[in-house]
Length: 261
Image (cartoon, rainbow, N blue to C red; front, side):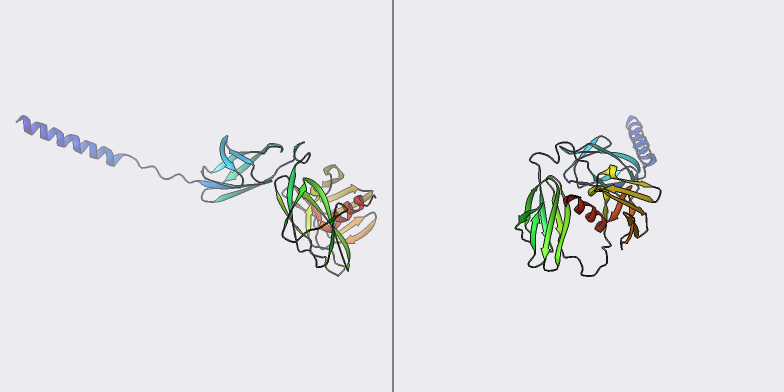
């Protein structure tokens, strides 16, 4: 009799346990997203919501959808805080250009420059000094602004470049086309001019630099330079909150500065 009772009790407990296991709710998988973080210069340390995730470029996955906070640090550069919005089942892109601190572009900081498209027979100078360079070979240069001039049988032209510490910069020195058309390329104004020398109000752009007065409008190819109208193939643009101007215009302004104007 006791044996039957014990067997029945064991069966009852087994059924209860099985029922409990079956009735346990199964949570649906929580949707997540990812973010790919890049910086200029690279190798910056990245934190997401206070958690260190490595050095840029870095891909961080399994993030809850919504807003997240990125903290970006690199020795010699200003710490930056960036907000990023993550969407489920997709990869958000975050690209940040760091601002140089007092020591980043000073002292012994150096970067690398690789010249591409050097015209055959061209004579090169770097900041006015002769430059013996081979296409595709790394050149070590002090961090900061530099000017590379190429002189060919057709004439002379100059490229302004910025060398960042511990960063390789590719420079294309291909000779400009022989026609009188202006380059369609636009470039960030802040890469060539101090930010207090240009302004953007609505669509109107005003640049005062090197003794020049430039008036232009977003999306319009005609630019007024010292009262004269010049037409560029590349129109001024505002991209991600930054002002982009025709590269030929920026190079003209900075070249005039180097020539003592």
